[in-house]
Length: 91
Image 1 (cartoon, rainbow, N blue to C red):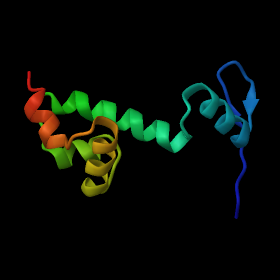
Image 2 (tube, one colour; image 1 turned 180 degrees about the vertical axis):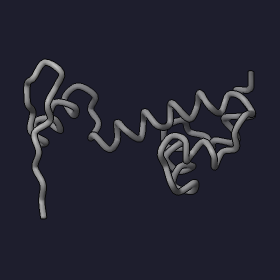
Image 3 (cartoon, rainbow, N blue to C red; image 1 turned 90 degrees about the horizontal axis):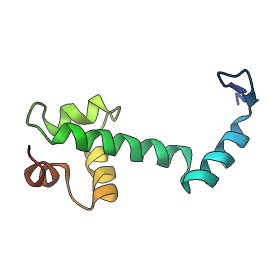
Image 4 (cartoon, rainbow, N blue to C red; image 1 turned 120 degrees about the horizontal axis):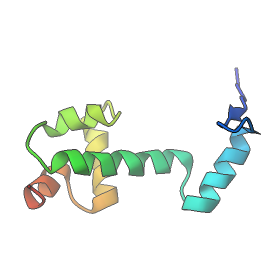
């Protein structure tokens, strides 16, 4: 079953899934999934700057259930693994 819901903004306006996709793509140059991955990687980078959590814990905290996939996405965003990033950006 395909579900096409309208997304309702705070001001009451509705936007279809396809319109939302086109607007996000036009503004960011990324798909919605790509934008979410980028935001997750940036949040993870902030968490990696201290030694409070392991890399696997951070992966789960930012919403990625597979630590291997998290490492790959992080490397695509920052050009380094999460562990290498942590070692070079410790506070």
